[in-house]
Amino acid sequence: MVRLITVAREFGTEIDFLFNKLSKEYNFTLLDRNNLFPFLQKYLGMNSEELLLEEKKIEKNSAEKEFIERYKEGIKEITKSFLEKSSVILLGRGGQFLFKDYPDSFHINIIAPLNLRVKNLQKNYNLDLDTSMKLISEKDSARDMYFKILFGYDWKDPHHYHLIINLSYYSPEELYQILLKSLEKPVKVSQPLQESFSLPLKVRFANKSEEEFAKLLTFYRISWEYEPRVFPLEWDNEGQVIEAFTPDFYLPEFDLYIELTVQKPKLMSEKIKKIRKLKELYPNINIKLLYGNDYIKILEKYGITKVK
Amino acid sequence: MEKIEKILFTYEEIQERIKELGKIISEDYKEKNPILACILKGAVYFAVDLTRNLSVPFILDFISILSYGPSKETYGIVRITKDLDINIYNKDVIIIEDIVDTGLSLAYLLRVLKAREPSSLKVCTLLDCPGRRIIDVPIDYKGFEIPNYYVVGYGLDYNENYRNLMYIAVLEK
Image (cartoon, rainbow over all chains, first blue to last red; front, side, top):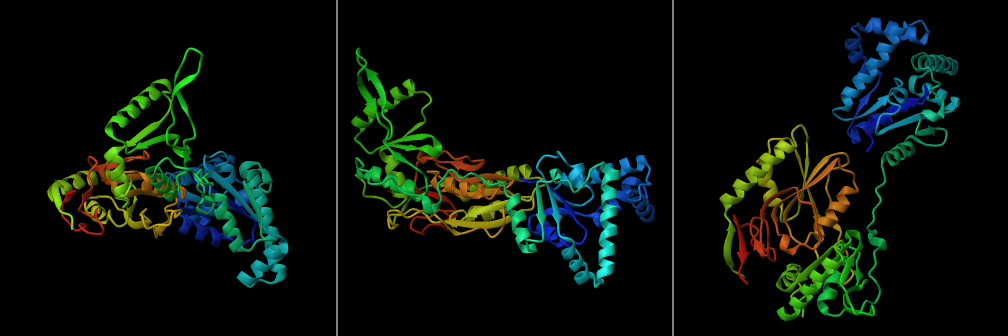
């Protein structure tokens, strides 16, 4: 289960709305620059102008080392305090470095070719081509500096991410689907799906009650094998098996053998003796006996009354 | 129509036990907002009274699966006939059952709901009938354990009858 998603993205990818959507639909707390800012002010004991000024200094490589450390620590601690309450999407702020080894974290980088980023800026902010190009160039440099100063890493290095997506190929909707798929940790379903579920072919049951039981298990999509194993119970001096027991069903998913009977009490006591012997010889075998009225009541529950 | 043989649990006994269950669940789910997945139709009465005894916020939702019956096709297979409306991914879920007996339908539901990756998945049943158990399923909260009786009332039916009884009773053979 993913607890923290960190998102790096190139300036002009204009993709934050997707993470906003993801946070709403899957109950993540979205932390971006804007909503982290007031918490950071408080943590660092600064007003907004002072903090803005210090952030600018980072991008110009003129911030003091002590401030840089407190600034990083602030982002990390604030994010952690949110993580105690819910899962978090952290947009930017060097989350991929601050939470590099954080358990259940997922680090994403979204990139796009220059022409697409320019197009996005022109469309979204009515900027002309030259201004868009200039802005992207400035922001790219500032971002490179920001990460180098704060963490000493090249943020474009693919090794920092679990997933890198280039928007030159994927639409935002496709990207969203990729994100959802990436965040799912596929569960191995040992039970076959409905389409692939099938009964063993042409099983010859010893009696009607066994057949009904097989139908019941099949209905509830529980795999079963009919009399798959013979358990020797007694041997003669030459090693020949002289007594054995074959449980009616084996349910592999539950590692469970089931013996069922609607026999007369005298025959049932023979069976009970055999099962006792079986448990002594094979203590690790998990076996359940469904017998007499108890078994009939189970079948009656499902409206099956004519079993002999 | 079959007759009632005896009353197993009176209305007062049921309410008293549900009150206790509500208290335990409220304690266990403090600071959480559990989703109560009520299994239709039998568990409705229980779920309603249970929610009235919870002191934590919760979301009530309903799910229904096809039950096995003699009229089904030989190779018919269980399926969800009414799914939960809410997405349970990363949520705390409590399945609300009226009775756990064979464990077959509950085992199916647990498998289906687990695959949706809830944060936690627990089972709360009003009645537990271990004498009929085929598949061992985990039960986290239970109202009463009963012998291998066929019981009706308080949501449990026989051919759709008796659900509205205020008590739980054993049917005459």
